[in-house]
Amino acid sequence: MKPFRVKSKAVMRVWGGRRLAPGSSEPIGERWEVHGENELENSSETLDQLSRRLGRSFLGEWSPDPEAGFPLLIKWLDCQDWLSIQVHPDDALVAPAQRGKAEAWYFAEVSPQAEVIHGWKNGALSRAQLEGLKPGEWLQHLRRYRPEPGSWSYTAPGTVHALGPGLLVYEVQQSSDLTYRLYDWDRVGNRELHLRQGIEAICQARPEPPVEAPDDLLGKLEILCPHFMVETVTGEHSWSPRGRSFEIITALASLRLDGHLLEEGASCLIPADAGTVRCGSQGSWLRVRLAPG
Image 1 (cartoon, one colour):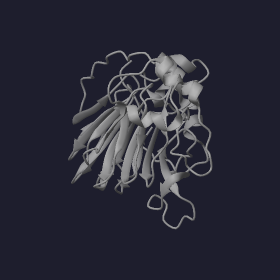
Image 2 (image 1 turned 180 degrees about the horizontal axis):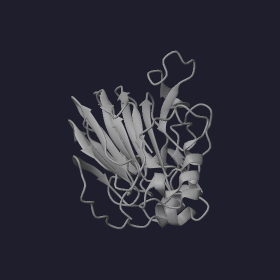
Image 3 (image 1 turned 45 degrees about the vertical axis):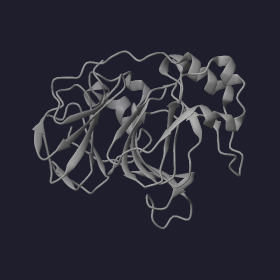
Image 4 (image 1 turned 135 degrees about the horizontal axis):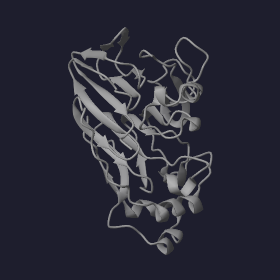
């Protein structure tokens, strides 16, 4: 099977802007580039359906059960206001019915005033302390910083976090919609909070096991976790997925991948059984795939 593209999907979010879907009357916070519900570019078949039909010949030998559908979500985020302070559960807490949610961020653009909330300022709180927090008090205990443009950050399940205004972010995550809001900035509209589930996700999160990097890296390894891995690659390369994992290539500058010309920000999928592929760019590109398992 040859490399192919899927149709992206714009998603409205109260904290979003307009740059991901120019002309939209609604604030678009996310553009889902690769997701199980996205249809193939020249077909009405979804990526989930393709994953179940072809199984590991498409997903690769490192993939979890193909019947669960496509395992990752790749998206861009246009943050024009604070996202909620939130946390995600791990696989063990929600198995077998659902996936947990680990995620990684690439900070493509960072305004001078932009900030991120990520983890505890002075050590983790106990369950009793967490249960005693009033909504706005979460902020007193959380670490805030300005990320460097072009940098990466990994968010393991159980890590309290939030993205702030002035960020354009590329995100790789397990395909899961399990987000537990802990505080929503007293935003008008009163979106639901999930304090009980969120505190459970924090307290029950298990340390992730170490993962050994494979022997076929093409560039700089940015993220390696039990669920996926990400490389930044520069220039031109020929390689084969070798049946290990499907791969997602995202252009940070225009590039050509076999017969596909990708504009900046666009993505293309390489099936695990694709054979030798060739990708080249004057700039850098991202290579995302499942982690060895």
